[in-house]
Image (cartoon, rainbow, N blue to C red; front, side, top):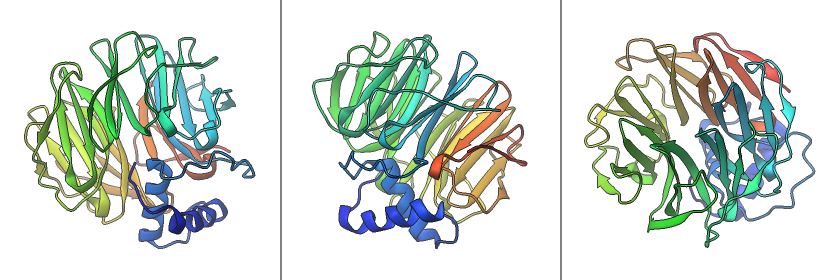
Length: 320
């Protein structure tokens, strides 16, 4: 997601591998989270860790797909109860995955794009002429949009991709015929023409890195650094602050079962009143991403931890 100096975070990375992010200070965990998600490292050779970090998760066709470090990929076809290995076809880090038109797309380090049209069983390469890191991907209106230091889009289910413009964002979501992207220093962009052009918006979150987005009940929510949480009720045009009730780094947010669930550094926050109020429900586990499908929230994190929940309040560890 975010970009930082490599040398400092290499040492932090090895701390995370040993600690599963537990017992560290919030700022250390936030830095580890940011490094994991933002692809600052170009080292594809780290294959010594038994369990890799998971950075992204998505649902489609009764299948959950989780992706992460060194191309690790896990899938579940039993509503998140059990998880099996998938060969992604790459050893580069995969930072996010999305589903649409019976297709999963996973994106990551050095412009890596992987495409599956058989519920994640096999994966092929998407064609893009550049090699910039891609941090987020979403689907809407028969279009996949991915972003990082570029806005790129595909209208053929991820087989071929075109660069639209240069930017620096970390996540993207789709709703009400609008794509919205977020990034460092409160950056928000929106597109109402299937990603063909983008407009910068005033988020009111200057000074805060925004790391995750979702859409639900006609609202976009974005969250990130120091518990920052903002929402838009007019398709990303304007934004207002919401009290997240935490100061932890927030990494991702999802909507399902009429609830918004946000996850981050040793925290889970939940709203059951359409995002007006949030409460903290878990304070001892760090998650990188969360998604919803078939009545289940699935959250993923360091060393391949995967948890499931039906309500965002009570969580069950299902992997490893």
